[in-house]
Image 1: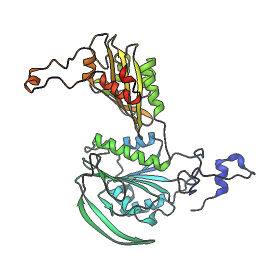
Image 2: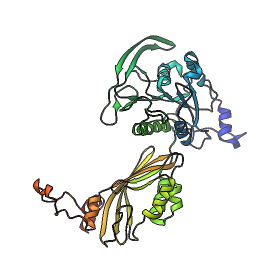
Image 3: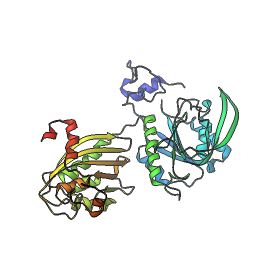
Image 4: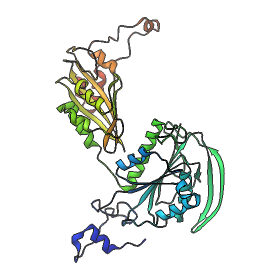
Amino acid sequence: MNIDVSNLIKKAVPESEGRNVRVLSENSKSADFRDGNFLSRDFPRSAPKLYITGEDDDFDELTIKEWQDEGFDVEYFSVQSCGADGYIEKLRDLSREKMEPCAKFGIVAYDSAATMCLAHYHFMDNNPEFKLGLLIAYYPTAIPDPEGKFPNAISTLVHLTAGAEIGITKQSQMVGIQGKRRTKKKRVDPGAGTGGKLQLAYPSYTYNAEPGFAEHDVEEFDGICAEIAWSRSLSAARKVFGIDPDLEVVLESNLQSKFFTNDIDKAVEAYTTHKTPHVTNIPSLTGGIGVEDLRAYYATAFTNPPSTKVTLLSRTIGVDRVVDEMHIRFKHTQEVPWMLPDVPATNKKVEILVVSIVALKGGKLYQEHVYWDQASVLMQIGLLDPKLLPQTAKDLGVDRLPVVGRKAARRILSEFDSEEENE
């Protein structure tokens, strides 16, 4: 690959005309132009190019929109539009496209298109200028040798359906020469644990679903499997293209609006509009589905006593979600509809640990699931006495319900400050 250093410097530093300027890599230990960090983060870049490809011309528009919302320049093409022979030529043409210096592109392929992409790019000479940096394959009908790694320049991720019969293709290769191919059928292993991770030479996962599970416009669509696969795909894409969005900004704005300033418009403004956002408080089943429902929820149900104090204990940030562990304390001087609907004020003090799992789409909040120990809350306000047992519990020899009050919250606080436990 030849780089016109002169033009590259002029583009990065327009004012450098006639001056002695050099480009420094942020990665000083290995200044490799194929490395996404070779150039400064301030170097002007266009939106990363992502090709989505499937069997036919009719493809899920929502999936395309989701990738666009994440900042990718998306283009779709199909096996049907190219023909079987023309499709391989189309893949070759992608590497011939004129791109900015050091730029890469990615491919997200489905079904037979995924099969053809995996077979093509597993051969080391089919990415001659290292322009392809990402290859994500959804439920291909065949995969390359599970013990054969992809070329180092390509970050690969394969999503398979557990129990499906697929082809396993082994093919010897030398530089410039493709050897004989041998394919045998094998059922996909369910993978390790609940995550379905397979121990292959390239990252692969299985899902308890049917092929098509990640496409919103087909009967086989499976929301749970699609979301897990989406998070893994988005993570792989961001690593390849060096994208690192700040997910905390929109989340903090939402928390500030609903807990402290009671700014309903700003709280709702944080949610996505191209998909149906929702909030569910699991113990009380309060919350809302859709923007207008959420607006009503924040206006009427999400009220808190003036004494409410929220302390963030931990925050885990993933590729498209944020998990907060919070300590919430308040005096129950008024109804708290989102936590204790239809329960009048008891003037009792409450301390509880709350876990919030927030998913984001395109930089906006998409869904929030909130968990806490409702039995502990009821015990603290005097609506649950662990010593008052139903007859069935007595017949089992139970002396006391396994419920604790504020001790649970205090136990966790004590891990941060040993004096808290003695308050």
